[in-house]
Image 1 (cartoon, rainbow, N blue to C red):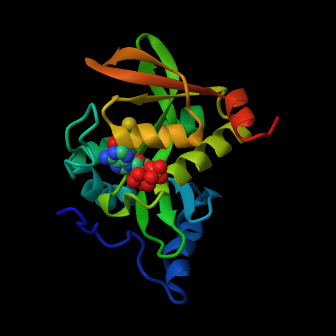
Image 2: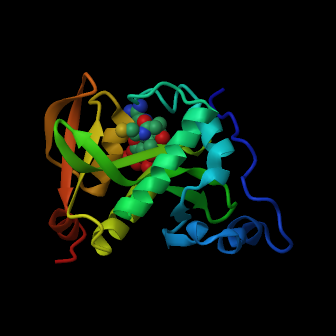
Amino acid sequence: MHNQPLLPAIFPPLRGSKIAAKLGVMHRERSSTVQLFETERLVARKLFHQDVPVLTAMLSDPEVMKFSVREVCDEEAIRKFVDWCLGCYATHGIGPWAFCEKDSGDFIGFCGVGPELVGDVEEVNLGYRMARRFWHQGFATEAVKGVLQYAFGQKLCESVVAIIEPEHTSSVRVTEKVGFGDYKLQEFHNRPVRVYRMTCEDWALHNKLL
Ligand SMILES: CC(C)(COP(=O)(O)OP(=O)(O)OC[C@H]1O[C@@H](n2cnc3c(N)ncnc32)[C@H](O)[C@@H]1OP(=O)(O)O)[C@@H](O)C(=O)NCCC(=O)NCCS
């Protein structure tokens, strides 16, 4: 159960290399699938409806959804989630983005920043979920760094929050490693959480860009 494989990669094989087969198709299908940015091992692009099967495999895993305000998701819930993501891209220019591994082309999960009501304030919230077989390889940290670099670098937002339950040790560790420090304790969907905040300036200072 621990290393349960995901469904096969969503993109059908083409002629040529395995990577080209899985990543190259992104540029052919439609503009929404074009690469947004890349990190050392990962490529980021928008989510779209073709991701529903691989997302369903990932988000129906109780371990992946353990620290979530949602229960495990079925296909219908995932379709609504993708609709919501497409709406976010259209209205806010941000949202959860798909991440694929460069070497294999495999979809590893999503990570991004999207609008979230925290208390009565609309914040830009950092969210990330990786399929279980990709945990413990530094992928979440790498994806989050890429997202913050892109979001702040492109001036898509001024400030980002990360909402984490204190006992979610691996997620706390990810935020610490990318430079989140101070947090407020707050209730979120009836759960006590830490609300970390990072501003564009914090990011620049942490990465010695100022
Ligand atoms: C949280 C999650 C994104 C982490 O992904 P990941 O790719 O394994 O993360 P990374 O490998 O980049 O880093 C994880 C860090 O947590 C540490 N860690 C993992 N499990 C831990 C545990 N039980 N106790 C202490 N530290 C732990 C790792 O050692 C690593 O830190 P290190 O690099 O200093 O050794 C992944 O487990 C996941 O998708 N979980 C389900 C969805 C979720 O909970 N999302 C976050 C919602 S707030």
